Image (tube, rainbow, N blue to C red):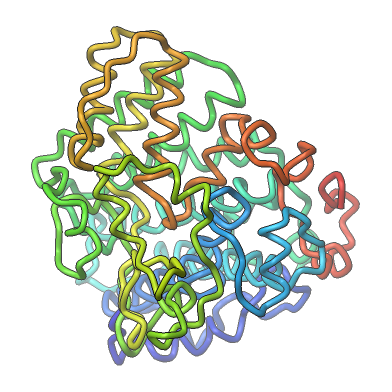
Length: 449
């Protein structure tokens, strides 16, 4: 993301606070770096997005965590710590887990520091409406970060305030999944009410908050078995589907061409000055890639010959590699956090669980199938419909960081993945460094680690 000159001081400050759960009293913004006007607030918000782009978060790790422990990717590179995810034998001292924990909490630290300062800004150019919209944007980001942490680790420390030097703040307890979801939903409700309806693909919008709300509610159903959550998930997904600026791209390949498209709900953008490493890690060495990960044979064999989505796989001789991210040299590929296609499949999954009329469910599924070059499906059983949604999610969002979370969310990981033999493996370990540094008795390790 292009950074403006006036935010450099904020970026330098925030970069110094890499692990916001580290026991160091340097997490609050010093007086000389306080936000005093509208321009500085905008710069600080851009700095928050920058944290989400980091290599420990959406710039690499989080996407790989969503596919490598599943049946989509296998590790073929030389970094041993990645092989632990492929084998589902992650250790608590795995540096990649620690990096992601620190990166996401760093993002939360930035967000909360800005949230806490907004009421103190007295600039006349910053109206109350603009302050409210800024808070809504930041609370969307805070909801996303907490939800992403919960998906990886289960119960986590909630960070809804800037970290201070007091003992409770520096040594937080883990909060229950229910408490995390309460905060996530509260933040999203505020964001949905106050964010603009105009789509801003690289910034939070009402549609982006609705998309995250639909994803969270569907996940929450599998925890609570509450049909009311499914009804709400359908409504929020429908609101995104009906947004006047969004429609499915006619060609799947358009989504990964580097050109603007009509399907992106919310994405993180990169530039040559602020790159990600995703394409480099996927690309074969013959095209100057690192080739750390490769598509599995099971993933490759799952495709119908007419499915155009297999074009994201290329071959160096007979060796397959992922080409969904293709800017190896500059690292400017955008990272989709929400695409419209997901909303169709969320609506189809929720409706199948509610056993609604199959015709509407098939309409949503077939919107995705037909764009992929496949004939319309005709499925009469709700079990069959749920399996078809799962199959389409696997192919549609491969290497975008969904597959592992889908199988864990639905409780299917143990059934589908050969290397997952115990429920304990479906949560990542809390980083050992955090367990050692945090003396709160309620900062405990996940079972099995």
